[in-house]
Structure formats: C-alpha cells, structure tokens
Length: 83
Image 1 (cartoon, helix red, strand yellow):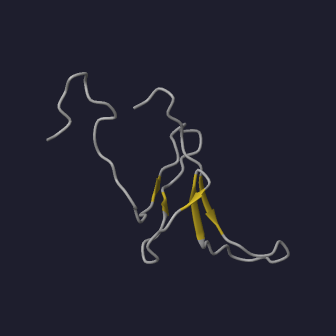
Image 2: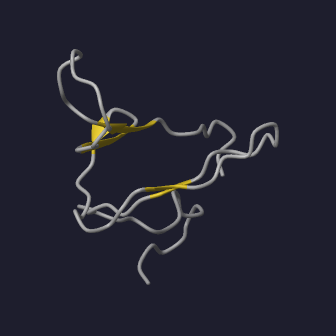
C-alpha cells in the first residue's frame, strides 16, 4: 500500500428540500465526489462503529465497474510485460 494512501469519502445521499423532515431514503452514492452506479437490489452496509476503539469505519458496497485493472503498477526494467 502506498505511503500516501488515505481513507475515502463515501457519501450516501438523499435529494429533497431542506424544509422536509422524516426518514432519509438514499438515492445516490458518491465515492470521493464521483457518483457510483450500484445495483438496486444490493444494499450498502455500514458496519458497526465502536466508540473509543480507534478502529476505522468499514463500509461494504457493490458497484458496477467499467474497467478493473489488476497487476503491477510498473514492471521491472527489462521485463517482458506479456504473460
């Protein structure tokens, strides 16, 4: 993991007027300000939060991916990048 890695900003949002009250029904999910496409039948799970435990808040979500890259960021000098 990179030494400059940081936690993400996850927003689970509802859009309605500020004069309305009641239960929040989220309709948009953003990760670091970027709206995500998520399957409607897969819930976002915010795991239990332990106060004074200094543990990070964990969130599980399923998203539609346009592209997934799994591999080395850089190959060693002179290496053949082909499998």
